[in-house]
Image (cartoon, rainbow, N blue to C red; front, side, top):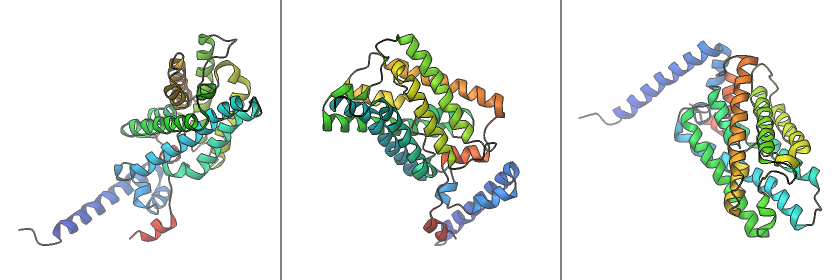
Length: 293
């Protein structure tokens, strides 16, 4: 028979060996200074391969995307319901400011992707595990659908719940090209500000938010300046207006792939410490830090 407590002791010994192995990997890849910083992180925040903590990150993505779509689609709904009292400038800056705020207050938990193509892009760069992409994308889509459902329950089916469609003076092909280019720019900003080479920290939120506002200011009449399949699909599903939704699924993905290629040309392969922390989150709650053995 196994003596009482021996399994626990064995598990603790194995976990200690695993942690030492992980520290060695960090030291080899990023240097002893980064390894020392890694050891100060609580286990749930530093062990990105341990899916026991994934529920925090998935809720963060769901909640953040819910707030984004509520602001983005909600601005269009309130614009329609109030006979244009918001104005186009406020309509396109509302989601930009929401993204900026969410990155600042919740980015350390999950990376605040809020967008399926951002998750895919980080995975293509080697900064984010592919096995986590389906969960992130599902959480983002659920958050978008919940936001659209809330808008419908509150205001009714106004302005098709803010669904993104090509503008009345523009063709589907033109909308596809613009969404591809806008998404190329957005993902380039996300990947670039997450890079060690830039080293701008919390200012990355300002860069991403500013780009979203800029894109909306000049391109929203063409395509709605979605750049986000979840933002477009949520309202489309709830309003059952799916005619042009393929544009907002395919174009952002194409733009993201082009952005990953551009990032490789500009900075080489991904997988660095800063990019991984930006993609996966790095929250270190004081209580969790104190509880570390």
